[in-house]
Every structure is written in structure tokens, then in C-alpha cells.
Length: 421
Image (cartoon, rainbow, N blue to C red; front, side, top):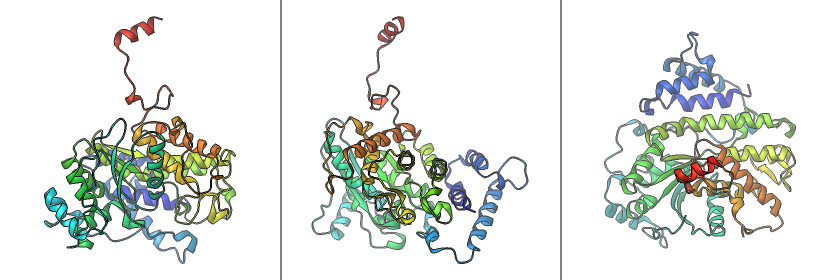
């Protein structure tokens, strides 16, 4: 039964996307058939929406029927009600996002904290600097904390403005409802990001994922951003493997092998793809993935090979070691790994390997841990994860640590001369 939970979750996420697929449902069903052949109950080699829904219902019923699951296996709630208004073609008329920039600014002026500016703006970036807004929860917080420090060390002025929360309260859906004053926040808008997005210039937006995400939870943000900043790009984190994927906690860390991590990482990617694939189809060239999951999988496999000096275990919940890759049942990353996430964010956004940063970065905390050797390994892993992910938007064919798209293209005459030599 250990593989039931991740497969079920992926199918649950996938099937709910049919109404949002913008004509891509046939291809999606073909992809899901490859992942879940057992769902094809009539054996005709074609997975119908009816079969997919029936399989989802069957698996969900079976999971719900298991008596008294172990407390360690429950983790955070992954099933919750969402306001049915999300299924309608339009949000309520009083949604803040429908108002003018001046009106949005006036609304936020009435509810903002005393020391919070009404509109945050940055000057036109010089060089490679980017103006970035973001939502997210505790899985995004480590990267949001370290990214500005990494940028400074790379000679880039950090320009980051976020509206975050813990758990569900940092999800894209929750923040949209909160900022717009709709559904659970009806009549009580807090348009922190909407005021700044509509009244100043931005280059990118970042999001953290949450259980049962749908493309609609992101497309509302994307549409609003593009209305006011047409050149913006969007980056979705894919989180990383979590214990809930196993159904129940293993007895010891001996359970974790490279093959286990590869499988868990593939399951995470499948669940992430059900959202990002739809968004990429609707917004060509605009939507990318922050491959934090691949980075953690690579880090876990490096630990198994003895290549993470100072890291003492895989999971604190299982092995009881403080310096582990993961520190709790929900799946928060362990001490030091906030650097790895920040490096992934940096590498994806700026198209450069953190290995090219010549200096030690003043992250604060214990100067002896992570060591310089471990920090350099984090930089290497981050770049390999980013250039190895097909949806990151970053390729490095010549291996110089810079995104290929940022490099000068040789003229045809120069190329001919090189080929003749």
C-alpha cells in the first residue's frame, strides 16, 4: 500500500484539471493512462474521464476506509473544502482585482500596517537585476530568506516583495481570496501585492505549491500581472518529497535508497506537472518551474554517497539526527538547506550557477556549519537541478555555468570559420 498514496494524490490532482485544460484534456488523459493503466477498466487502451473519475473515487474510498491510521502517517490535512465560486467564470464584482490601480491603492491604504508602504516599487533594473513579487508558505520561506543575500554576493541588487503565510494561508488560492476580499475574506480585502503590481513595474512572480492545487489558482494572478506588466514571467516551486508519500513512516533510515528517492521525486514531478503543464500551454514562454524537488533528491542521493559533510541523517523524524535533510513530519528542510533552496531560486531566476559567485556569503548563524565545502556542494547541486529540469527555462550546453540564452550568438561567418578549422 505504500505506493497508493502518491499515485492517488497525483490522480486526484490530475482529474480535477479537466475543466481547466483549455483543450488539452485528451493529451492529459493519455499521459495519465501511462501512469495509471489500472484505471482503464474496459481494457481498450484509452482512459476516459469517466474511468479516471471512477478510479479516483475507488482509491479515495479505500484510503478513507483504513481504520486508525498511525499518527506519524497523517501529516498535514490534504483534503479541504474550496469555495464553489472558483468554478464560476468570474469572481464576485467587488473583487479588488477588477478595480483601477488608484482604487486598489486606496483600498490597501485603509488596511495596511502602519509602517507598510502602500505601494512598493523599485527603479528600472541595471544589469541582471529583477523586480520580483511572490506568495508562499514555510516551504518557500528558506529560499525567500537567503535569495537576497545570494543576489548581493553576486553583485545583483535584490528586489523582492512577498505576501506569505503558514501552510494553506500562503497558498496562491488563499492569498488571492485574501487580497481580493472574496469568499472566506468577503468584504475584507488586503491587497498588499495587488496594490504594488498594479501601480509599479515588475519582472517576475514566484509561487509555492499547495495540496490540490488547480491552474485557476495561478492563472488569476498571472492574468492580473500581465494586465499591468505584460513582460512578466512566472515561477512555480515544485516543493520536494515528503513522508506522506510513503503511506506510513519507515522503521529506519535504511529504507531510503537512491531508487526510493528517485521514485518519490518522480511522483512529486508528476503532481507538479498537472498544474504547470496546463499553465505553460495557456501562457507560452511565461511559466517556469523552480526545481527544488530535484535539488533535494540530488542532495539526498549525495548524502547516501557521503558527499554532504556535516549532514548526519536523512530525516530527523526517522533517524533522530538534528542535522538531517528533513526535520519534521510535514517535510520542512533541515538546518543549512535554506541555502540550497535559495541557490535554486537564484539559478532559475538569473540563469547563472551559484558556483560562479567568488565569495563566501554572510548567511549568519553558525559559521562552522554549513562548512564551505558543504556550501559549495549546495551550489553545485542547485545548478545541476536547474539545468537538468526541462521546465526551468535554463540550459547550459557548453557547461560554463551561464544560461545559454544569455550568451552572444556567433555570426554565420564565424561559425563557418570554426567549422572549417
